[in-house]
Image (cartoon, rainbow, N blue to C red; front, side, top):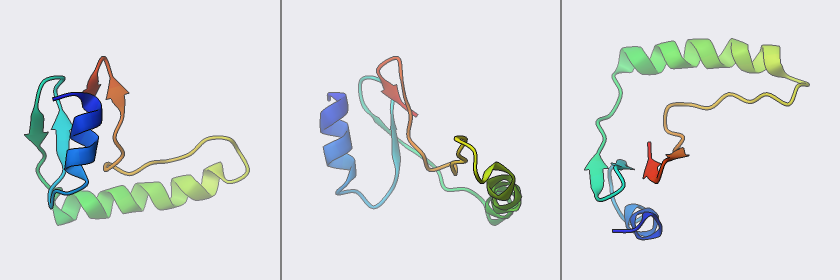
Length: 70
């Protein structure tokens, strides 16, 4: 499976996946506690970064690194 095939395929799936360079790997969801902590960190950080070129992203952002999606 190519990276492009994975991204097109994943849009039709109910769960999230990573791509190890060869095949999709199912991702687990986060706990309520982790989600709460993430929100508690991102909210004030966004306020502090307002007016700068810096941006925050939550844990669901996909990044490409060395032919893999994480």
